Image 1: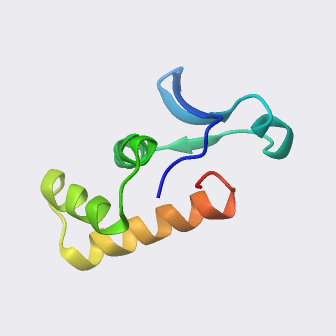
Image 2: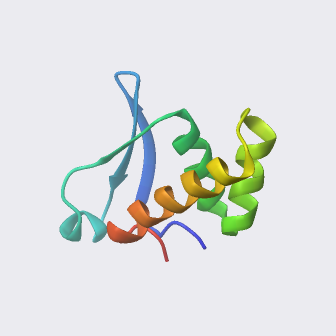
Length: 87
């Protein structure tokens, strides 16, 4: 899975946000704020990756268990899907 063309990650006033550009701005109002782990996951998704790879990324970089990583990735992806940000 991959982030659709037209969504960029910016840091504004120490807040990490996903902002739509171009035609995507017509369909998406506002912006999406991400925490540090969300930023890392979003960056992985910009080049394309799998859900399993995202879970492994969290396990490799954060002190969490498998179930927590799977749940966090699932919730993150559901939020992006619901906003129409993923291809």
